[in-house]
Length: 364
Image (cartoon, rainbow, N blue to C red; front, side, top):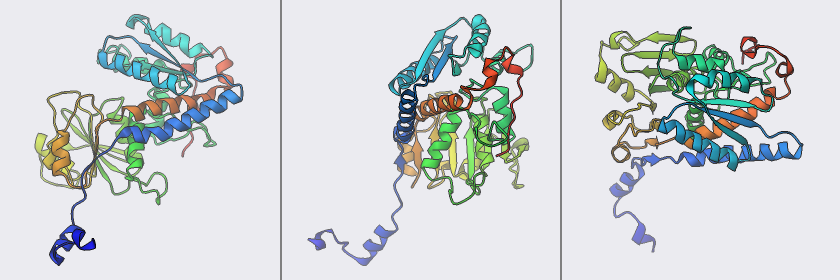
């Protein structure tokens, strides 16, 4: 029986031994499951202790089908895992007042806005009107980690709210989901200290939105990676504590000047991780650029890469086609963290403008 399955010759045996590992399609649902189990256990513990169940209020002030779909996913997941969720449909012009009311309501532990509301419409205060809305959410209730306090903490690599280092900052949910995917795929070297676990890794992110690409670049750079952030008209390089523009397409190592598609090709070929988040059906990553044994993560609603071609032609690549379930799990996790950090905080019982309170951001 052994002879039937034995190689016919020594050469065949050697070829079998050095065969390239197959590419893999990674199911993000399996990554989300342990987090959701932990969330369900935490909710059960709160019930046993007689505490209020954490409540998230989501505000939908647009007709964007993707935003509506995200709201439906959120509601289903939260109710399934025992958390309280309320979706409030509001007119865009009434949203500011609605946010202020939710900030002041002690029964509300988390707030999120389904973007875009005004898109890139400019704001009198600077930036866009959606940027202005992000800063209206109290840091005590910002489940998305997008208000000024959490953005500043992230970009300064401050990981805790308090100086004692007991209350972790809230991180944006989709970037955090991508980090958890990379941890699951062992891209992080856990033998190294926190902050150095992506040392030696190169990452290319084709997206620089305020919700996904920019915070993700900072998070990965804070963990030691060299990160190239590709936008429609520029490339930035993120290193811990340092941001530089790649001028006219020149790579930071002094390579010759290259532009556009050629520059993106060189970045992808050098990358251990590629994150794709282009909201367009016309954009497709050239799979011939992808490095062997790399990780490719698609976070756009559209498919930014030909999955079949990628898996057939890129040995050892690990492809994650979506991270939605992990993102929702991070939303739930952030709500529990806000409840743990601030549910009994004395500031919540004061008649004060929470937006002007200065929280102490401790170094990690």
